[in-house]
Length: 323
Length: 268
Image 1 (cartoon, rainbow over the protein chains, first blue to last red):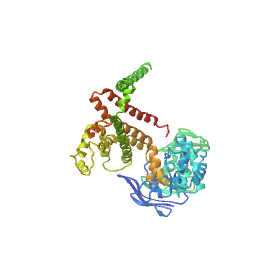
Image 2: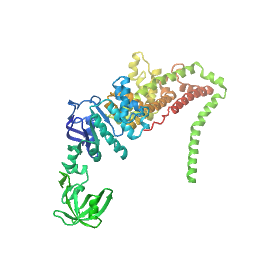
Image 3: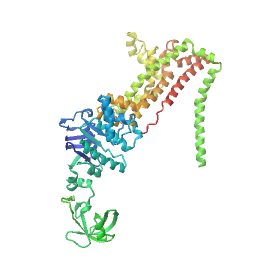
Image 4: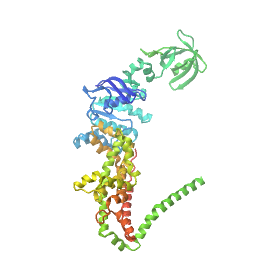
């Protein structure tokens, strides 16, 4: 378990972290989610010991780690830009932590071979980082971090520098790896889809504070603030209320409690149809429908339809009174 | 397109012509004049006891100044790039001082401090240690004028590689020293190599500062550059050319080493 208690970190007048407290359960895969400048990377680097907090404590596995150097925290760290040791072969990169610990050569060889199989780089032992693709480099960096059997694995935007396809692959692969290895993992990301996809817990950061933390679905369905709601998914405004575009029902005839709107644009995105509407008061509204719903309404530009909040099927649909 | 091309060719001719007139022709002429009287005469000129002594003294000074400046240069570059301390701008400026100040002034400054009238020189003299008009002073002068080379070659490389690899090494359990030897030093090795080559070339070729502090005692404090000057002043032109050619050969050897050391392509 990692416990962060009242941590503050300032850079000059800027508060990167402002009295942050957070508990990360053992064996979880927690995402620190937030926009750039929200303090998520600073928080991760503080847990790693790469930044020293101005106030507060960091506890890792029951021991106070606040003043410990990164070498003694039992962590594995993966950087966004890989931080590959460019002058070393893949084998030497992965073996680095073990060789620092003066483990026997035979043990190192065996462990490195095993890890390279796990990350799918078997046969790349003698390559240099410059000869690998971005995704391969990041997998090498993961193997390198896992080699020292860390109690905590910390990933700083690990897929941020990769293209969309490789990113999705590695994300699924990380999820499987975590199911096998069960090491407590903290992942920094600014991509809510990535966080929802891979993490079993999410802490949303904004302006150096934790806005909310919990299970992905809790955050999506029961956001504690407008910021969390907006960051985790699309939001639209209906009758002074913030709602999810897929929680808005449209009908062709007036219904109780529904607002009269006019369709300004219909976009067909395969299964999903996105409609842009405008209310009588001129307020824009965005709605997500299934294709069959849109076909049934014969939705077209210029149509007058009635919109109401109808969280269909979802037990606790997110809606916040707009500020 | 055509004018573009003629422009390019014109610029190349201009650049090459400039290099030829300023560098290649004079250096080539030195070699030509050296070997004009025949190889035997050249050998005689560079194998006199004074010439042999000058040759070894030059190498000796370089052998002390180069490792010293390499070590100092790496440490200073690390402090400049990685360090966070007050007065960094001052250190930054001081490093370039030897480039900015004429070598003669550097020599005179050393005499002021370490000469028999200087405060450090007087104290050292009382303890039987002579710096000025002796080899230690010449080493000191050479070290002084060579200070910027390694720093200025290594600092940009350090800046470019950043400290992420060092941080990664730390999270993997490496101490600062381990991270330096295993990660930082291999990463900056080409910068260090260039710096060493430039320092060596300058240490061997230094004239001004060394000339002032050496006293020019034949067979004792006379380096190759000083020997060239003396022979030239004494109208021993053949001897001067021969010693110059020897210097040029050493310098060309260093340049060749630099070219051969050129980094093989390690893509990022």
